[in-house]
Every structure is written in structure tokens, then in C-alpha cells.
Image (cartoon, rainbow, N blue to C red; front, side, top):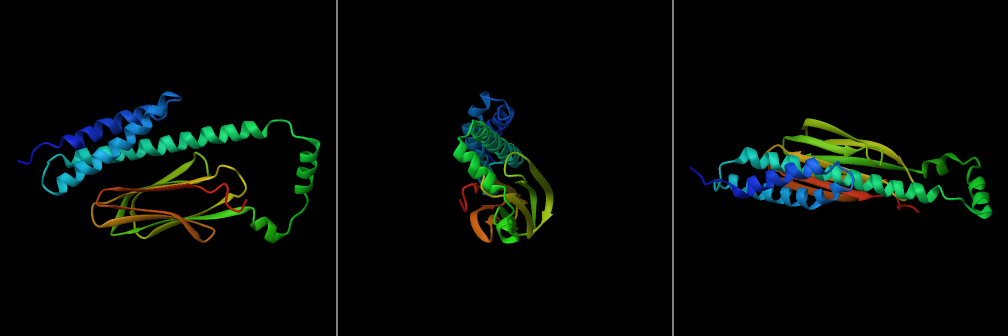
Length: 214
């Protein structure tokens, strides 16, 4: 029988602890290294199973999933905190000159100008067969959607308001065990981020597009 897979077990434990800590304010900051290291160890453990050097593939895959979910939660928390900081700064009193500029900005705009105030975001997932799961942000902040057992290729188009200092787009997809899975984020027709993974690996891409066009 193949030897036990210590790396896969360690990845599972770190991923589980990181996922538990990730939604907790302040304390959740320690989840970042836990889920990242857990994801790496779980991926290495899964690779050992595929080579026949270990026999607990299920535990390693579970570690990958837990670590990936914990990482997404950490990213969402970071975005939420950043957004709160920006909102607080924007709530401070403005000078009369700034108020005049704001009033001028409320004037009617043309259809072309209105279109320029939005970003068109396209999430794409390609690869062999199906994706076990796909998770992506939908509002540029903390809201996300998920799909399971998705036939590839897959894509989703959303629109986000332009001009905000923080406008995060993120997608995470887990492979179904065969071949390579690839994720890509297109903003206004341009690819801004890509990532790939093999087997049951997780491809994760994210970016802050709030400063585009500013």
C-alpha cells in the first residue's frame, strides 16, 4: 500500500483552520497564511497521489477545496475593509469648489458618456470536460455567485460602475480531475488576468479594476 500522505493531511488541517478563522473580524488576518500554505500543501499532496506515492487523495482534494474557499473569504474581507475606508474618506466634508464640481457632474450626459461610466466584465473558464465548481464576484465588492459541475467552455458577462477607487473582480474554478482548466477575466474587451491549474487544482484570478480609465 502506498505510504500515508503527510503533506495532504497538513494541507487539509491548515485549510480547515484557515476557513474557520477567515470570516472572523481582526482574527481572520491569520487565515491568509493558513489557507495559502494549506492550498499549496494540498496541491502537492494531490500530486503525490497521482504519482502513486500516497493514498489519501480524498483528504488532499478536501484540503484544496477548503483552502480555496477560505482564500476567497479572505479576499472578500479585504475588499470590504478597503471599501469601508474609501466610503469613510468620501463622507468627509468637501470644499465649496468640490461641491461646484460635483454639481457640474450631475448635468445630463450623452449615451456615449453614460456607456463610459461602466465596465463590461467577462469571466471565462475553458478546459477539458467540466469544472467541479466556479465562484465569481458579481458586484465588485463582496457578493459572489457559484456554479457546480459546469460544462466547459463557460462564460459570464456582468457590468460594473466605473470610477470607484476599489472595484474588485475575482473568479475561482476547480478542475474535475482531467486535463487543464483555465480562467480569464476580460474588462472592456481586454484580458486583465489569467490563471491555469491541472487535475483537481484550483485556478484563481482577481484584480482591482477601479482605477481603469481614471
